[in-house]
Amino acid sequence: MLNIILFGPPGAGKGTQAIKLSEKYGLVHISTGDLLRAEVKAETELGKAAKSLMDKGILVSDEIVTGMIDSKISKSLSGKGFIFDGFPRTLPQAESLDNILSKYSLAITITLALEVEEEELYKRISLRGKISGRVDDQDRNTFLKRMQVYNAETSPLKSFYKNKGILVLLNGAGSIEDIFNSLSREIDKKL
Ligand code: AMP
Image 1: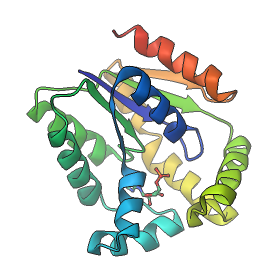
Image 2: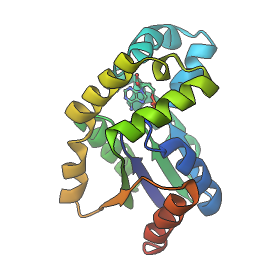
Image 3: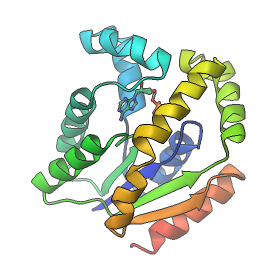
Image 4: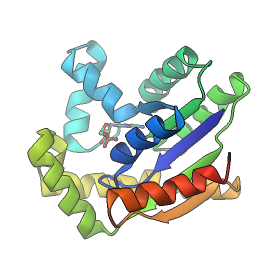
């Protein structure tokens, strides 16, 4: 199986690229943000609890997201693999992901980290906010909060994957096609 983590700050293009890559390589795309937004839309108890945190740019608890991931993985074990988008975001989540995968004798093949300047991220997020209507994309302070959370809790995971020898850093500035091609080149090396 080919199991990819698409890593990067908010607005780096993870969602867009994950959709394209899942189509190209036949992978199951798992976005914890999308799963949570579906819960919010369906007004489930989980969705109600998550909404106010998400709107403020604060992370939902590790237990909630790892539970969702485990259930998604267990349903697609006969596929070609997974592409994780927006997960893991904390060290406990990264450790849980390893544990969940190893339960099924699986492991992460590669972590692809997109790097983009903060001002460019803000431009992309505010543009997306106009189209998607996402509350967390429409306010500069919420963007700054999300960057703070990313820098404090998520960015350190790069060392976690670097130590495992599976981290690849990529420039996430440029056209969608150019970035897609550089991501594909790195994945092809693993096939
Ligand atoms: P995203 O669509 O990935 O930008 O996620 C939107 C929001 O959902 C985040 O700001 C968090 O509030 C929540 N969220 C998504 N993924 C996670 C995760 N792995 N851990 C905790 N919270 C998450």
